[in-house]
Length: 437
Image (tube, rainbow, N blue to C red; front, side):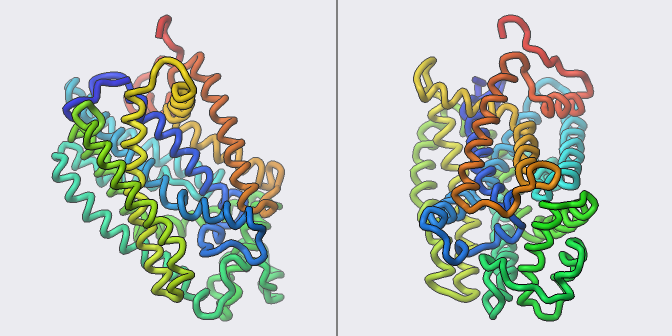
């Protein structure tokens, strides 16, 4: 565990931060599995598919209420903490912190680009690298300055995300089939197209009521049956639209969390002086964030129309940062109290190993999940309902826990962390643990 006092991290790692990073990966997997196991339309659903079993309805609302848009803010907050730690250590040692940070972000951008193009188009790493550049000039700023600027970025992100999400439901609210209805028959001219042609044809087809079903079927066919060229084309197309969404909407939420994470570190939030504040923050964040998340899930149905969707989207994007701070507060405080034995110590150790190898495990999860769902693996995309997707997520996370345990017995860094660290510091990291470590 590190000494994280007076806003400075002197050495080592904070157990609670590694553990909450591992926990965040589980939450992200529960959300992403909807995209791995189906089309990108899955994430736009306001309600489960008509005729769903009660257990699938519960699983749908569990993910959409407590997980969706709740864990990427947490991961973003931790990323901001990490950049601020790197800056503090480099400044304290008199090293060139700017060159290190730029190399770190450039490497992350390459990892993200390869991830998005070759594996899965829901990548977040490229977005982190791009918006991380905006944080670089502010790494030396005070906690107060970072908090103020982060609040401005949060406001921009909430407004942008609310508008983006609402506009994506305009057709649905005015007569188009709901996102849950992917079985709408396609016109013959669309059905005859290749998946990539159908994906783009869905955007321009004059009867927009068919566009969602066309995009859904294009993704399922390309990812589930291939060939690789069609899957690549659809994947790159979807990723391109995602970049637009990031620039106009949720990327600003990411930047806000970066700033808040750096501000918390500078304010000594993770040290002894922050204990009392963390307790109060956790109570307020969960006390407000959970009701907001529940309201966000219910408002589209209770209010109806674009107003209901907009209110739900706005509350959803506000609840994410609140719950992120709540989780960080709980895990850091609990990590300070974890003893050498017992179930809690085992859970924290397991989550901390997953979090320590966070980059490797994030990419590995994409490989494992797409291996089950995509044409180059088992090709089971479109075969699972919400509850089964949750079960697959938990099962794959258990695999990640075991692999992280086995790897940590011999190595200090995950393979991707080893490469990332080498590029950042321009030297070969020691991969094996030294005796006694």
